[in-house]
Length: 355
Image (cartoon, rainbow, N blue to C red; front, side, top):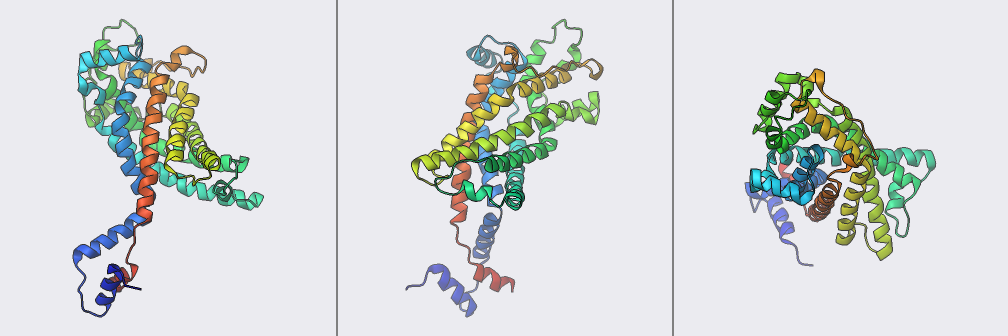
């Protein structure tokens, strides 16, 4: 059988015929690093793409949650009229960095937690949820749902400490123009000078303003609601994604990571999770808005009301956004992981150089 180019280079190097170029060595080291951290690489690159594409829908969703608009088109028209095309991407740079970081950490924690819970369940019951999930023809069971849900909830709870300050500064950027417009609301709880002070500030200056008015804890305003939302929401998110992939694969007799299964499961997990936790997210957004417009001793704390129509304003936009962002994210995520898995690393060459 003819030797491959990589085999010839490796043999030649061992014989001292061909010196290893720095470029080739760095290429092999990069491929090995990417294979080792394929989950993190795939999650970060996919997050950048999906977040940027779907950000305008997130921006409109936030505006509709915290201020009253007649409809989605009314909010879009008002935003374009008062802020221009840029208004839909106002504050995008902070979430591009923070959401990428959060998703990367979240998926890393989820992957590790998934195997940990699988091991615990296997010891307790004698069956492995991950083996069941990857068995052709098998349906989701209580053990698979428990494994994926617990791993997702663990990841969601863990990332809240990172995500909360970034999400608060993102919300401030998204509604800063609206806060300036509503500065003469007449409400006794609202401080007009305070809410105008957040107008057109960048991420760092917004954070400084929060610390100045509320102390360091101000960066974590709404943390309890954020923690509740992400713990429950991320658990539901991964249960739906993994179970939907499994069901779709069984229905078509294909691998769970086929493009169609990934797109549908990705879109579905966003729809289901947001439908379940949206009132919690609305309460969080309203409370954080109140923290930006009133002093800490007069900040109104909204209740989580699952059957109050007001708490569902912007739900359609949010579900559409989540469907789009997760379909793009998981498609790019699975595609990137597959490409990285196919990379061939010349371990012999790397070993001979390091040795």
